[in-house]
Length: 393
Image 1 (cartoon, one colour):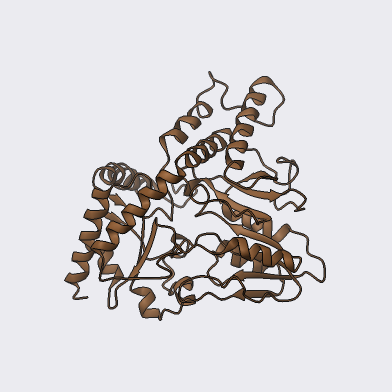
Image 2 (cartoon, rainbow, N blue to C red):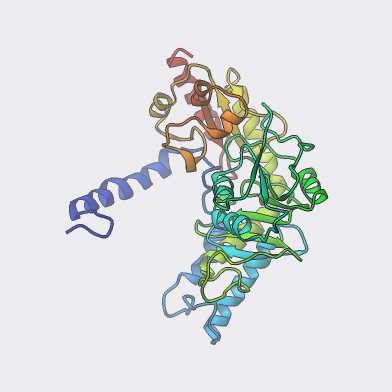
């Protein structure tokens, strides 16, 4: 009989034996993971912080953090410790609201911020994530798309339309790694009376926070924490409404029972990122330099200087990406955002910086991380270069 996913017993058995049990051990020993923009591995410190809240009934770690009894208060204390750890990555003078991830945080910021009749417009950059673009469209507000240059950067002096109530520009682009002038853009937004929203998913714990922002969205799994939890930072004095209605948790702004385990993992990952911010940056800079030396024939998409070193987006004219991926099957890398993969359409980000559809399809994204070694980068880039040459490009 099919299960609730429509899978019969034979299908379930095949997945269990041939996919899950077979793939994970093989990947751990042979795969080189270079897709850190899509997600990062769970830091051992984050896993250790989660385990007490995943234990069985003997520990009471399963308690609801919104309950008033002793185990509930212990779980609530763990949540508040995590909240402080995450807040330490963000500007002072604001509060952290836990969410299911950055997509929910961005939706709450965009769809629940009050905008008067004279402040209806929303401005966002041409290379924003779909988690900004689609909620903005859904509001029915007038929209202004802020262009980017061939370097993948928004002009900090770009004209902002009269009547704009919210300006949204991400700190670090998830596809091409460019670092936007968010501090100046926040100043510009405030000059016209607008709020500034920053998607800091790729920058949190890696770069200094966007101090001028009024609203900041982050997620745990992009900084070596668990999937399924993120946060919206709200500057003191900024009013937002509920996106999810229910029991009134999170100060009445985000209903739903929080997971102490996820919160603890997020907090531990944030604390570790704060400790390692300089060391991680230096490590990734060295990896990017090594990769560029091996892939010297490839062209960098976007600015070569105003970029996060953990993201290297490259193109080689005439490249067949599906064939490259097949020939490099022990490597995990991508052609762009994991959220947009499989659509068959050219990357919206690469199109925005002026690439033709063929050039966009000739591009790859390499994402390095804290645990990536120089030996892995050398082996991966050598394999990619050899596979490209085998295509005659």
